[in-house]
Length: 296
Image 1 (cartoon, one colour):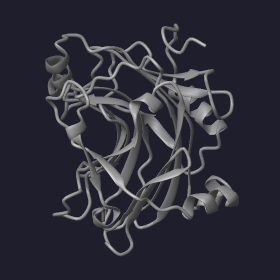
Image 2: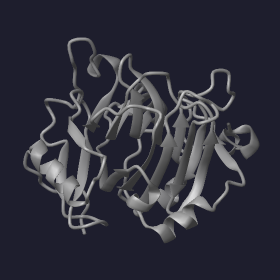
Image 3: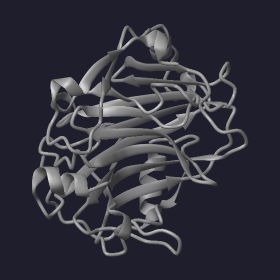
Image 4: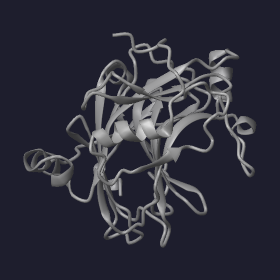
């Protein structure tokens, strides 16, 4: 199956939402296209027949120069390009379970060391990033921005899946969190393809703030790509999302047997990627081990 280079006609948001709803999205109710998606992009978000759950997935495409702007912010002036879906805001202090399937083609064009966010949870007002799932030189990473102030691992990039395994195969991401300002009650857990990769316990949220989910392709600090790769044009980037769903409990998201398997696991170690904007490729020195007891 050819995963790129297909001709897509412009897709309305109603068609995107219908495809997502067919996968029984639960509490993950999409709001709209991100307002900063480029008005010049022909069809940055579309419905694809390439799927792992049901019959349809959501295809995102980002190309050089496709950047948007609002009255108080411009991606174009801040070296960014994006194509994302934006989700309804939610209140904190409640446990929630998310599932995503993502597919980056075998020939995916990485723009590392520029930052590439695939999934992002953020505080709405004032805006602040909570968590990002990124594609980096090291692969798929989990980046926790907003936690306990003074935590040495607060901005660590935890490697979830290396690029040689990430590109060309579907990846299941299960994310479980209790967004809570109380360090005793707050937590975040991430499973990749059924294996526990992150088990963070601690303050995970700002008091009284609502948060939002957005996902797709969001490139920032693109000058790092241009300088390190000695290229002026950003390559085409494509990703597929499927089976996006959220529920209050694991059993409702998945099933009892799978949930028992997930929740019985522990993390033996974390691999931290020292993200640097000047690195042309991945170097061994950029990877280090974090003991699970200190990741909290």
